[in-house]
Image 1 (cartoon, rainbow, N blue to C red):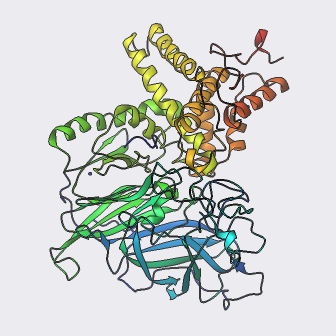
Image 2: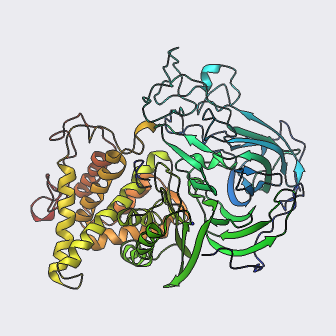
Image 3: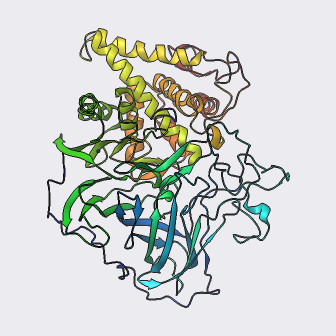
Length: 611
């Protein structure tokens, strides 16, 4: 994501192609393929079975402690939208089928689904009609989350255990001494961080009780049928994300948690199933989703679609984190081309003026070159396809939807494209291990913006093949670092690894500060070793997620001086740049360890030691 302050011809030209591996959607109400019930027993207590956890957050968490669900691993999701673009409604037959693997014996488990919202104009208004597990009807209910680690359990009768806050303890008007159970949904960006502390958390946990217990290690498929209007989520900083209404359909940007405002899922960055999309929508509309387009099928008029309908099938065989699921519907142009073995998609909303679409296309055409450039640092592009979708809603941000970057407000800019494209490696292929790690991937995406500015300087000075060009590249990075390092006021007051929801997407702590830290780290390791560390991270954690200790451990291994003193100094570097909140003012109130050739105290002593 490129910051909160930033903002799809196939006019249905292909038809009839179906590949044999495509997961086929069943008729509404039919059983989905699922795991065998062998070894299952009646639901209830005993046998070491229990309910799966209703959160993946650790005790004391402030950042969206209500999200994620335990007791299973997410393997694959089939999204089958039945969507009327004119009314912006999901119709009967609309469903998702999630294939999971139990990590314990389960009597019940949960998903995240924000059916309704206090945002009555743009928020969701959906209804679950039925749930089945392995094709057998299951009981379901919606409950409030409780705070992670609640000793009284997930059904704690104490209302104080289900309150929202951006601080720990909750506080609020009743001085609640307990940790928060959820992040408050601020109504707008004028609201203060603590204005809703102590309010009750919404019942967004869809708890499912299968007819028989699910044994540990068993795969199972849960199908949720639902209808109604998708919508947006009011976030902890007052902005919105989710399914934005457009005049011709809906536009999806969802970081950090709003996928649950249009579909039920395990809503946590480390939950990374593969996806198939089989979306039946109003005739004339285009569906743009993650992965690669498989087929387009046209259907005659029906009671649900008097003017006819069309089913778009997309396949994303790679793991996709919860907030990176793209599934927009509208009057989009859609083209693709293959460059260097990667299929690049381009989609623009046709309501964007022809002149603006032409301007946008000039930048969109840069994506293969940008991808090749960023591959020099990160290693090979991790997916079979890449692409860009430009929608018209004035969303709060542009977002790195996996393999299909979403730009809002009808326009694109080059700097942001460098940023979001870098995310395909960092955040998408290697995802953050939790919300506190947002800085890690945003910092690397910000580094891509610095690389872009350095690339322009390099080209102006003669290009990468010349000594002057390479020197200009380096000088540009040094200049960028020194400008950031000179920041004062409250730039250093929030530790990147410890924000509250209100400041999670603040430019200083999540973008510029870690971005500058990566420049310093590149100076410490040397460019070749820094790039080698990035490639090793991709090899080791691609398709999965990473924690802060795991990230830092790889950079430690690529430190050119392996003395204990240098290793300790690098540990202090990470602590200062990632984990420390300083008093306001800058100057002495900022990290002291930087890198060779940069403002500050550098890293090495005389002779390249760390004495």
